[in-house]
Image (cartoon, rainbow, N blue to C red; front, top):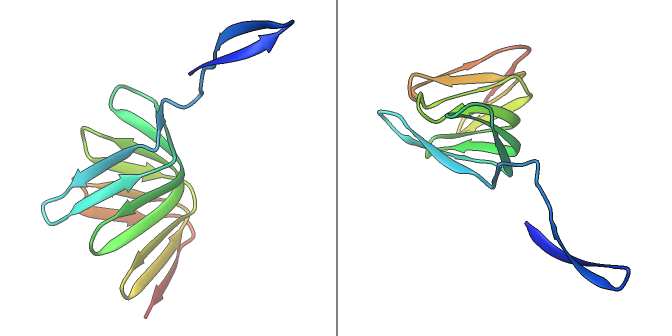
Length: 120
């Protein structure tokens, strides 16, 4: 991002480099039964097709949502993995866990670590 500043009564053209590769990234996982929208505040490329999503990461579909802060998303394999506190919510279930793994093109979700399941 370019911006101008004044130094010693002279206008100086400066370039500001961000440590974020993507601002407000949006992706989707297209499973055989539903579409899962993936959003976050920031993202950084780890590899060509892997992105570390950070800050307010949310996976949402018509049936559920998962919220976390740091998630590795693979755009090609359509998978996501997190070792951070995560909250899954659906109509009658809430799961708080220490992480999750979305795999098989979004058809399967595994929760791990200390987890609490609330059934309504």
